[in-house]
Length: 83
Image (cartoon, rainbow, N blue to C red; front, side, top):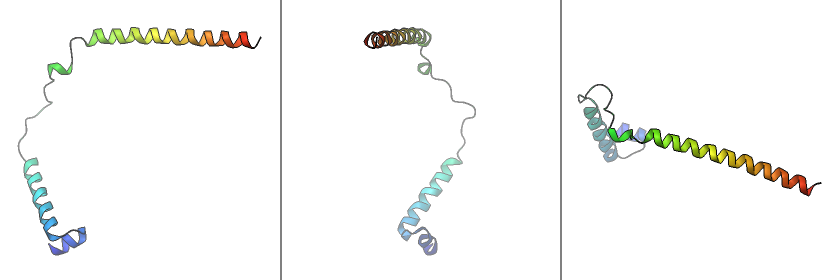
């Protein structure tokens, strides 16, 4: 164990602590688990999701239209200044 600790560049005490943690993790990983996918929680998919989606789509449309209008106004101002 002294050689392994030296190769890892740690003290023997640290090596033994790591070894203990690794063994505990391996034993834990070997425990039986329930199969399949975990059940979907009801709160994971709120009932209001479709309504929220529609509202956000409407907001995006309004913002896109606002951007187009602002760009047109900026072009109009630029052409007035340069004519």
